Image 1 (cartoon, rainbow, N blue to C red):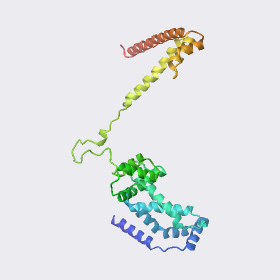
Image 2 (cartoon, rainbow, N blue to C red):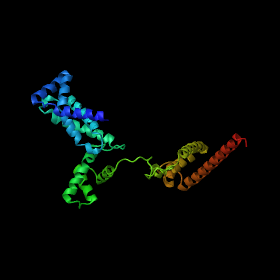
Image 3 (cartoon, one colour):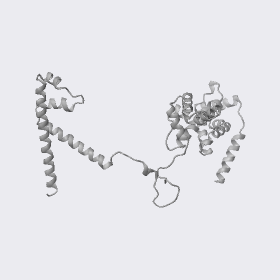
Image 4 (cartoon, rainbow, N blue to C red):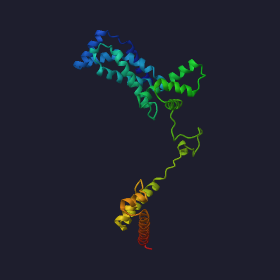
Length: 296
């Protein structure tokens, strides 16, 4: 551990002591790397801007992640900037690289700050990294008299998100992640209750779900077979009156079939009675087969 700390100090010291590049020298190195693939030029360009990486990484140290990791991710962003930099645009490399370095560090923080991914959109990302600063500023300007609801509305308007998003992010930032397998109390004793035991799931158990699915498939099969006992007209009436999402009225169906609505009702009742008998016979037959299989 001490050895690693010493290496980091040496790295930071070397980065901070690297010489600054003049505009013409910086452009020459960038052109040499972009057009010729000169790795020596890339190394010199990156080394001269490592102090920028360290300075930007230090701004995010309060998120609780190792500063060495932040610097490493910032270095990745620096190399990405070097790969995309166009010297012909007459922009200083530090100006262009700052965005890539910051974006790389922020992405690393979002991926590792919590096991629950946050900041999936640009607005959410801005909310994550600016909520604390904006809240502190509003507290200073208002003397702490502003209510949470009013503060959330102001921050939401400034960033372009909903007040509910601000409230949710504020709750997430107010405390660390807690394992569901952590004990409810801090005392060490056998048989401690874990937080996960207080989670209530109203859904049926897996065996119940599978059983209901099997029974449902069986009932659908039985119904299809039972429909085979109906005549063509009875089947049409049952389908349009009982099986369609928008059931037809007796009058409308009678008009299409050329019969009275009373006659449609009679045919429907007769068809439903046929289905009841067919399904009842099928159930009794299945029960008999089950008894035979059990040797009863």
